[in-house]
Amino acid sequence: MSQGLNPRQPPSIDAWGGGGFRVSGVWRPGSLLVIDDQPQDWAVAGLAELTPEAFAPVFAAGGAVEFVLLGMGLANALPPRPVRDALKAAGLGLEFMSTEAAARTYNVLASEGRRLAAALIAV
Image (tube, rainbow, N blue to C red):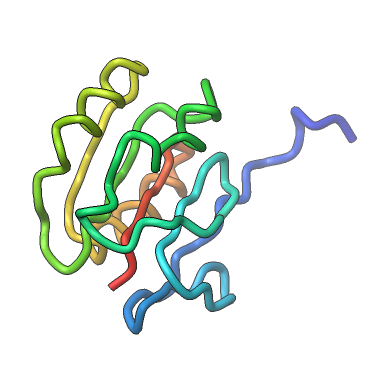
């Protein structure tokens, strides 16, 4: 079977809170980064750690990502300007909201086939 015939199977974010996420039924402590349908740990624990360098895996993904959906924690906050500028310079859109709203939005957008990176700060 050729790879082109395999339908995407993005992970689902089933739950959040308690310092982590349940992703496709598996508990993952800490913040979460999902790129090209692959969940991975993300070393950002709060707004102070949100730097352009934290998005290196997103930049490395190239065309696998159209935009970044950023979960800012318990409440929405404006991401630091260097992060916004770095994403813009890379040609990536940015949507940011509370982590809870971002997790719900990720599930909808991924099911629609959108190519996005979800960067979610654990709550």
